[in-house]
Length: 184
Image (cartoon, rainbow, N blue to C red; front, top):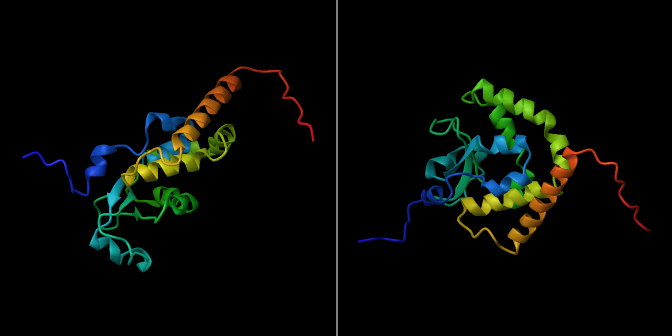
């Protein structure tokens, strides 16, 4: 009998083996992309309830979150469970802090992250405003098994990708063309 109703809590991993998709590349800096590659999807278990300051009493078993892929499987593994994409975006800084301090992360990964972090601000300035939050919202939907295009998000993403591609092309060649002044 073929059972199409898969209740396995790891079914999202089969649907989304990666936290990023090729079209996400135009929304992220190299630093952010490399940082995301150090993470994997995890699912809340009863044993996760007793860790990290006791703030997990209301999380349902099987709820999707993120974890460091380097310390996954160890008793000290760092897992992140946020109630919504906004909270994830607002407290994302916990993740690089962990990756840089985690004893299981190889030194070459930490060195590469530190190197990429130096060019992160300059790369951010070339990305459309809010692109990182668009990515976080998309990733959130992905790991929680929600459709990617909610409230026209794909239109927003396509617009940002198109704008970013144009910016990257124009920044590659020197341009003496001045922007027209805005009228007040």
